[in-house]
Length: 107
Image 1 (tube, one colour):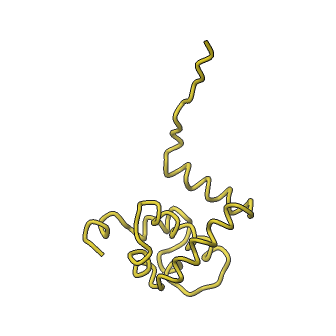
Image 2 (tube, helix red, strand yellow):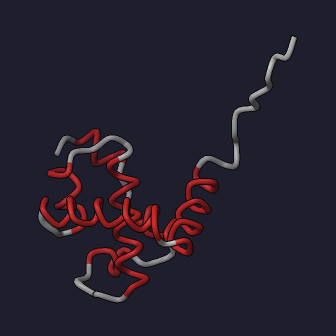
């Protein structure tokens, strides 16, 4: 992983955004809250964009585990309303609630 990518990534910052500790992200815990947090952090990192091979060592997991967490995130956003709500809240906070104002031209 390059130094530029390392500088962009602060695992402690991302952990704080999802409401867990950095240690909880790196743990092997199967606690629902911590697994949800890991899934969200993987999705955030992949959106930067980063490669799965670069995300894996940050969390102390394999590239295969990153792939599974990303697939889990996509399923949870689609089918699990409480997870989707939490994900949307985190994204809104990250974007500082700034949304482009789309006005329709009806002339």
